Amino acid sequence: MSPRVFRLLILLLIDKYRPHGYELMKRINELAGNITRVGPGTIYPALFFLKARGLIREIKEGRRKRYELTEKGRAELEKYLGDLENMCREILRLIEERTSGSG
Image 1 (cartoon, rainbow, N blue to C red):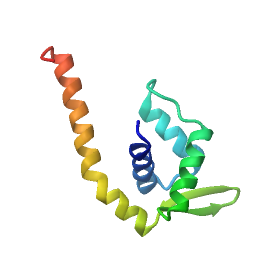
Image 2 (image 1 turned 180 degrees about the vertical axis):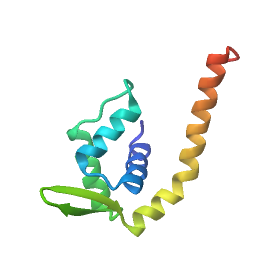
Image 3 (image 1 turned 135 degrees about the horizontal axis):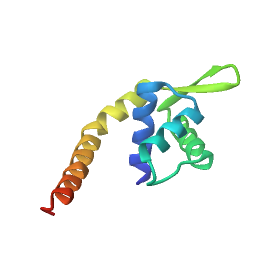
């Protein structure tokens, strides 16, 4: 997965769930199944990158930090959401063709 697609996935999940880091990592791993595993050494640098660019902000809740999109982050997600949907649709089409034997 390219870094941009990975960051868009993070933005999408933050927009929907406003997760803390561990919860975000868990959700990505659930989505990925056996394809890949995301650990703290991947998720926290990505969150730092997004925060440094003003796309997300932290909300402290006790010892944990939840994340939410900033307006800039929401605009970034909206900018690429159609491309992300098209990519997912094309991947599903390829899988369907393969399983139906026409690929």
